[in-house]
Image (tube, rainbow, N blue to C red):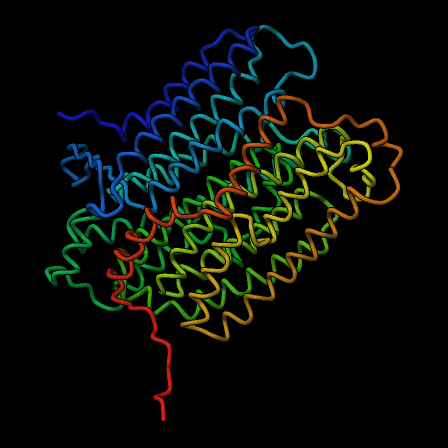
Length: 523
């Protein structure tokens, strides 16, 4: 029996969560180092998975399959393709930065009883989310994926509601109410999507007789499994609805600004850079893989919704007064680009969408974490409470600028490559949609540059005059993320090599080929 590498990669942060939670209440620093150790160990295992993955090999590699709930046809099946391994790497990479950035976010504000363990709980919950997200990228049994898809909501609920942002305008009681509202809204929205998805999962089993993704896709490809058109469309809608909430896609997006605004900056990164990627990943793996005809049927509507997300999210970002809510609405716009690339049904669009998931995760993490350092110093999320920061904290301002420029997809930074591919793939299939989507680029330049101008330039606000610059721990968080944005901006080949073969498989599932350019014959 070969070593279960995928299981080990997903199980390690879960074990770390248990060990972290078990650290004695008084040993908060020990708990932090334990959590960081397990997150770095998980990154090492993820690196081994990436190194062992062969881009030109089988579609699903390092596979594991064991009987689980045999009476109901449920198996413990894992496998990783090019898209999954890229997002596995993103998750494992970002969690150590999330932990380091949130090093003091769960420290008690005052002395509590010996039973009070907020620090241990905070870092244990982060590791538990990591374990579930990683497993969701690896699961090739639909029922197993569904369980993970829903279970990750529990630790996220407590991270949002129990460890909210301390830079909240208003009384502690009001802050607690806002956190509770954001956490409940997050949970209810995603539970509603999950319940509808559960009905679709059961329906899929009734039709296919199995939960195995690979078996269903193979049966559909060779013609041994046929679904009535109406059945396939209803099942597609059940899956897509849940994924569109998680993504989030307009008009199912309203939980995200509340959740990101009330959460700490590291937890906000966990939400938008990691957890939300499960939704867009699942659109590629499950919607297009299981329901190819229904996916093509729904394409015009999904593209329209994606365009609304791009423009609407960017417009609302321009008008925001709260730094974190601005970044939240910017993320809604970016997820619109990702979904647009997926449903453009071109190889450039889907490759760009996958790269966008990775690059958006890195750029948003860089911008949000540096914004978190800024907010912690000033004690306010309001843009109007800043001004002239670059004169007193130039390194903080510089890293904030690079994170912002990456968010607007400046050439030379990683998101530019993915956004360019999405637009190229969209233009080739849907020229009008491509033209509309480009407006998101212009709006992104407005909200990013206005944010920087109002917070970092101009006269020095008296409240920030004594603001310290980034410290060593904060530089350890910010500098590697910026270096990665620069590296992938000029050399994206390590990602494109593993992503492109997986995209070819997805294009084959939906039986689509790239549009050929029309060239007039020479006279």
